[in-house]
Structures are given as C-alpha cells and as structure tokens.
Image (tube, rainbow, N blue to C red; front, side, top):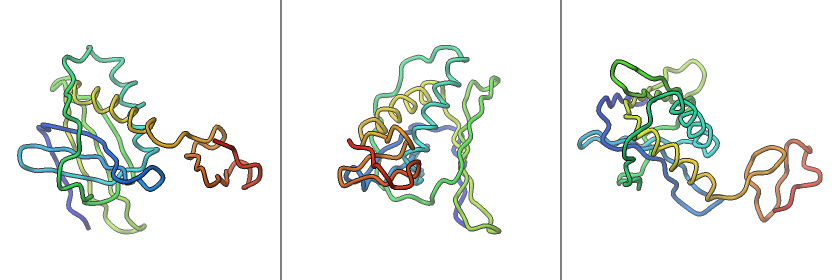
Length: 165
C-alpha cells in the first residue's frame, strides 16, 4: 500500500500538466510547510473537479483574494494515481476538504489523501483547472474525449465517421 497523506493546513494547491498536448501527464499538487504531495490525476478528473468546486463555491460566501502562484513545484513526480475524488465543506472551520483515493487492484488497500483548503485556494484551483483543461486539445462533441489531429476513433460511433478538428 502506498503512503497516505493528510495536509490540514495547506499553503498551496494546484493542478498542472507536464509534457506535450496528447502526451501530457496531469498532476494535482499540495504543499503544507516543507511537505509537497504530488498525485497523478486524469484530464477529465481535473475538468470534473473544477466544475464541482465551482458549484460548491456558489453556495458559500464569496472568496477573498485568490492565490496567484499556481505553478507546479519540484518534485513533480506523482506518489500515486487518483482513482476517486470527493469534496465537502466544514462550516465550523470554513474549509473545504478534498479527499482522494488511490487507484489499486481490487482487493488491495488504497491510500488516501486529505487536503484542507480555504475558499480562496479552492476558487483559484477551480479557475486554474478549467484553464488547464481548455488549453489542451478540444473535446470530441460526441464522446468528450480529446480530438487528435491523427484521427479519433470515437467510441460513440464505433470508430466510424471520426469527428474532425
């Protein structure tokens, strides 16, 4: 089993991508003090997370000044791959809790990561995540997977009539 992480006072949280479009590795990263935790996340997970966090924030008091330093820090090597993500709000602490679970084969114990975030950190993460996803290849209008200039075997058409860019 991989190492679990609990960062209750996060100084920085961000998402980023390493590599060329079509070959990018997406990462979710948080820092608390000297501890930096980097986890692998899928592009579609970044998009879903950004949308969900934006929706959650609409029901909360407006955040203050958003953090601007959203670049990945070294080491940018993922500890493990995220299988599932969840978020909840603790009104007493005015913090959002982001919970991730490791992708593991069935029957194995999964590691977890918990990051306690301010509304400002969450708002910046949602905006930055949306921009990151939109900066890549456009999505297929049928299946949502990224379109590729070399062709796209869309699962919604069983590989026939590939959508064009």
